[in-house]
Image 1 (cartoon, one colour):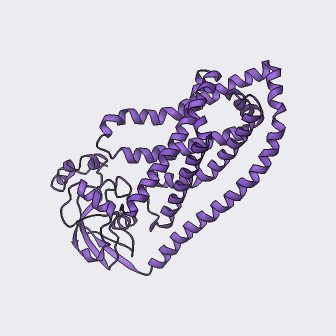
Image 2: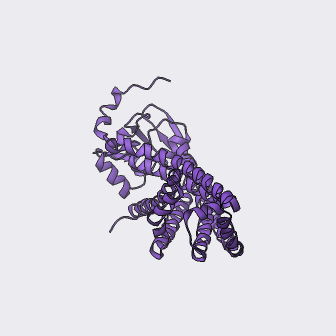
Image 3: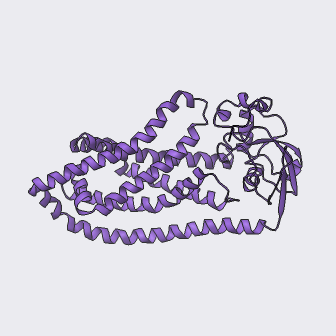
Length: 376
């Protein structure tokens, strides 16, 4: 049976990839606005319509629910607020995405009703956005961009650690930057085209106006449902944060200490990992994957107090085996200090980068001494 930590990590990755695929379809369709409105409409069948089927909608809702639940669980189980700037951005975007995505789903459902009411083409929806409901247009665009940035950061942090990154990284990075830029340009060009047609085609404009009244009534009803969902989400976020803070307050009365190879020491709370204590105490410590147990760059040799550390978990065992770590080695991000203290030797220099995860042999403990500290 697969260990629970591995299951949760795989579920988070899989649900995130589904959401990323959904956003790629939206942004790609918008980018086609650089060609023409007819191209946007033609490709919509392939890029967007599958998500409006019962299977596609169900998969999207399930992925969003799983990813949100696991994100809240990650907050509730955090033991420290020490994190990198990238992780802080990821956390903020992760919290903002669900309420924005709810707004997107509301607008999408309205579009579905719009589709059934008259002969829908993509340009007509853009006309509604650009001329009659610009607020929804920019809400839609904003949420898609938020999800893209959140997903791109997560995708990059996962892919950059893979040994094959050197082969495909040169393609992935330009795509991650190009897709949202092209989508913005396509959205602007498509908007310009529909505004021009609204001025020159009164019959087309009248057709759209005729169907806006029932849609307006639908918006009020769906907004009320959206507000109820947002209240539930806010309560769940408050609960997750409350659990995290309660754990921190509980453990404050149980201090622990970590000693390092250069004579430094750092104080922390019982239950924090060695890496969390290092970061909180401003002790330089490599951590390419930001403490997710994937890169192995934070690994340490336990010199004293091994009994004060939490047992090995499945993620730690897998990563230590991949980097061929010797007996007595632990991942600082996974080894939690439960006893009075521990003394460790950091096996990689603090400036170790993603190559240390892809090619661990070239950054082994015997070789780390040959890397001088970079000039300030």
